[in-house]
Length: 227
Image 1 (cartoon, one colour):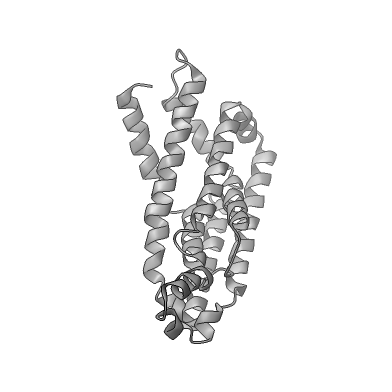
Image 2: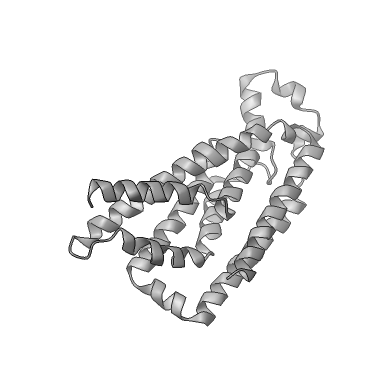
């Protein structure tokens, strides 16, 4: 792949990663729930899904999905249902112990307690494990068949049939994944930290639960009804 073509890929990947979607919402929710550093596990799950989408398209299966309406719609509605589930889960999430118990004063006491509060004070259920976040991130991106359509339209612009295909797919995949991690962690997860003050109170956590739950359900509606 030529350097100018790779720069075009880099620019396109960056713009696409900054487009808000279920992945960005999931990343921000994780960042508020378990802290900036641990939110990386959900982001890695989302990248695993992107790699799988890329492999599906590269193997030619993506054409089958996009040309079979029943299969495409089945995946689309299943994905929407999963996002609705995440939204309802967000609505039902209970405020963290620190917010309800007045732990804000204790947080100021020591760095260790502050780190513990960063993990447990949440808009999602506090203390969620790394594998759980990874799995949820995987399902959030994997259950969106429009990602396959995107890759079908996106990949041919950067693949040259006369050159080794494996090397090109590896370059494209690595670029997309690295850029998306940088944007998700360096922008969306970091931006969510500006709301950390809100999560110090039970009321603030409930408001964020409603906001993020509504965003998940809104994205689900777009996925299900916008063609």
